[in-house]
Image (cartoon, rainbow, N blue to C red; front, side, top):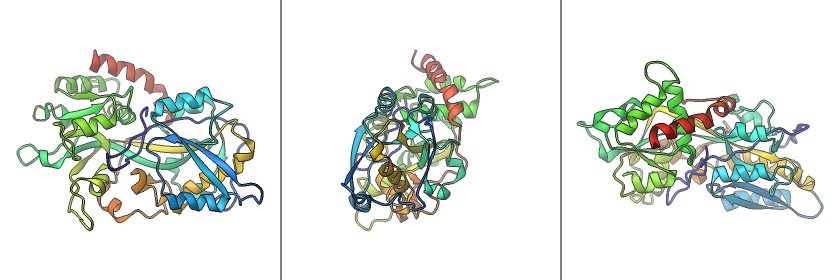
Length: 374
């Protein structure tokens, strides 16, 4: 996902975006049996440098717990755009500006792995992570969280006369003309995820391909925006926005953020339904990873390993949902009630291997540009 940084609300931080990097290192290292990483050193306090995207957030108390355990400080370097972050990490290969990178997602993972910017590491916490999220058999990256890119809709815009959409096919129907806004896959991580979903759903050949689908969307007056933020805040009519498009490409977790941070939210409020709904057909599974950057400071390596282990601990994983609006990778983590109630769990998301995405990505973006923008 190119944009992969997705702050989920002007008042929320819905995360997921797509940075990437990853890759081959030499010899794999194995974590300490302690899920929180190697024991702290008795010597000078250390510093861990984390490279991440703008949507990264962690509670101060959670971060302080790691720093106290490890007698270290965590310095966070944020890059606003996922593609820019990946490019910077690749250009700095062998002499990175950070020790650990968090936020590379499966949409661009193959590019990062091919560039060889990560050293393999087997975290002690991997036993809590479902095998489906562990997409790199060499463990050059560690899965930290996931979220599903789905169509969202403004509940107030639909009724019995014009019901809310339930499938991708609905968007090209006459009754939904001029209702949809999507992100450009060349500049937006959720936009790329949605494009990949249409390729998986409609295929490359046959009677009706993904190109035909996008041709029909264009004819049905689809609106294209360069970023998730612009699509969601400016064009979408839901989410407290003043836009006029009641259907948008966003996340299955977006409704939870709307309840927590929406304009109608109030202390103790518990609405029966979020103001926005989710179309579970055609959702694309995004997974975010962390990895040890190749060539990083040797003295910081134990601390970097400890940080990855800490990110998989229940303490960190249970903080993530209402910080970045993603699902934790640790199956033992307990979700907050508001997340359980309003974030949608997608039963059968569209999934692709990083290799398959890598083989498609650049070509389908070029073809999409020709079909939709030219």
